[in-house]
Image 1 (spheres, protein in one colour):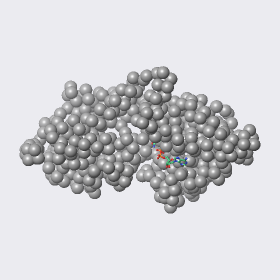
Image 2 (cartoon, protein in one colour):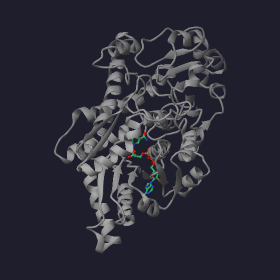
Image 3 (cartoon, rainbow, N blue to C red):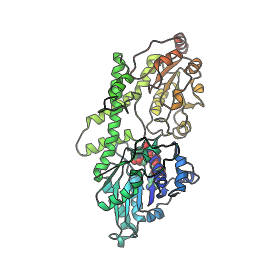
Image 4 (cartoon, helix red, strand yellow):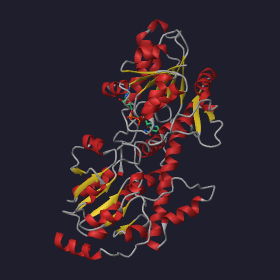
Length: 478
Ligand SMILES: NC(=O)c1ccc[n+]([C@@H]2O[C@H](COP(=O)([O-])OP(=O)(O)OC[C@H]3O[C@@H](n4cnc5c(N)ncnc54)[C@H](O)[C@@H]3O)[C@@H](O)[C@H]2O)c1
């Protein structure tokens, strides 16, 4: 089939590459000429494992090209995906400006040569399927006032569930595909589009193996509104699940229980499940906060106050603050101290910094008069460019970060941090304090390496070996 994907961000680029890999002919469109130029050179505009290989393979299979111009691609397409951003407004509601502009332009580009399906892949509040339909119709009316009735199209909601960092695998082997639509013709087009994915009729690309036993993917069809709600409900549930783990961890810490043990114990219950139970410094990223806020906003529009969702946001905000408290407990005074952040990206295997806990922590520390250093395997440059106001000293290696630092904070659980030589880091620090915001390290191993270690939801450990240097450094800095 002929497909256009509007928006070449984390969702659009991966969707476009995967659909072309499955054999569809895809054009990816973006208003950002810089992104399109990079894609035309075969470079991914974002850091996402396997994406550049997928773009190369996509070109050889169904075929993929890139454009800043939506019109010709839309006119030639059977399916047009909208995958533009829907960032939060200060009020918490989703900014639909990009979606509205895209929908209207799609309408203007349509002609009567075929039936087309406009698919909303952006995460949008309930009712946006209807809004897109109205805007496309208005676009048609503006460009072709005499053909308004002849130009036929359907609207589908097809929420995206990919996770950054494993977006290619999530797109090729999803847990489910949700398609919301009101008419059978639209549904039939969507079934045809996704048939290779549903039947898993493709060879796995290199490095992205098919999960054992996956023979078919479930395609769930719903109403437009239910599909829109499914996306918000899924993200809200996951955010609440992490928030719950953090609440329990905070209680564990006070009573002397070990949160990782407790989570392992409850995660084995098949009704609960082990994933998204890692206690830490809270979730971040472009989706959870924005989507929970947008859902709260929608509920309020209908006169409903969701206490649970509101509490989920508050628990997460407090969890980020926990790092500061732990540093204060260890160092007392943060003014003039040098704090090293291990990791900046909101999670491993991405360069995405949207709503990253690191930013909040760095900002708070800087406000309090601390010096902030950071090392991220991928996101240093993105942070430097996107947040020039944050006076962070970017380091080239974990060792450089540790040198003369008063404390390290593990913010992002990158794989490479699991293999750190903790003893080497502790040895070059002014005071070997480690706040493990993701419970990545074994407390015993960190203590044996010379660290005064604290995790999240872990009983306090006695300070070993380098306690004397902690004391002397605290007094000299005062
Ligand atoms: N990032 C994720 O992990 C993820 C997962 C699931 C769902 N989503 C949802 O998918 C949507 C896209 O998210 P993202 O992270 O890919 O966003 P993004 O900000 O990375 O990318 C959006 C892109 O759309 C482009 N754009 C905006 N208006 C345009 C227009 N009129 N025409 C063409 N291009 C336009 C922007 O230039 C940008 O490149 C959001 O609604 C988000 O909530 C994101």
